[in-house]
Length: 321
Image (cartoon, rainbow, N blue to C red; front, side):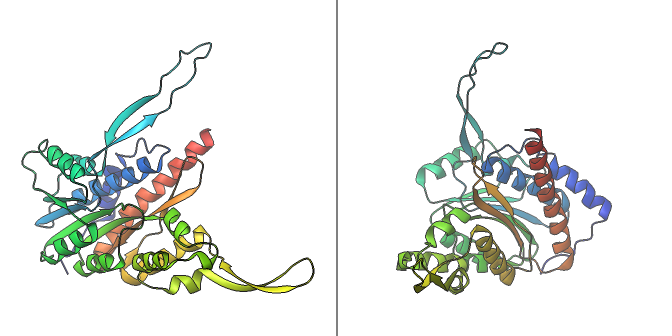
């Protein structure tokens, strides 16, 4: 589905440089990193396809307010430098970042279930006169499926950002995205949420937890993959059969990746995001719904460049410490 895309290797290199113009400061926080990755992709996507498609869309299913607050730690005085007080900074969220991308998108769809967030998004939209901005209040899964079903996606391309509250994205929603054959989706998967719901002892797997995991993953095969029975011998030589979760975070991440690969024509290796203590919290996947080889090639080259650059920059920062 869609229009054939022909872009030279030289053009791809240029698009990669445009994309990474936004990555001068990824920051240590996973929020800074994920937003920088998405911003870089939006810049390259817009530059590459603006003249090739009648409409380019940006869809943010958990848009929040468009801004975020960050607590910046202070520092004690030294013999040379004065003390620095702790402060609160207001920084751009995903909605404002998308609106700042140039060239702009044809249409922006911001979704959130909270009234206060939607009111803030309405105020934000007033700062960008002339932009076609739609604000949708409600459950993200229902809103996405309704929005996608209301459109004919021939002649359109879109980027969607799924940054859910926990495990809120249903597999049926991903299926609706895939059917468009027009949307590149950045999907932030909560590894911490999966690890928390998939209790170590299967006796603690409540019906609610099983439902939540199956709803997100689109299958109940996770239980067979993540839990094993094994014999355990105690100090007295007694043998018991133990049933427990054997999958670690890496195995869960791999399972999610395989599930996405079973649905989308192309899924890039994820970028794992950690908290300040180095604990893996999220994985950011880029899934491409357009099966056309040139579309896959372009999205893959841009996405891989951005992901690789973020890894290299993170390595340089660790080395600098």
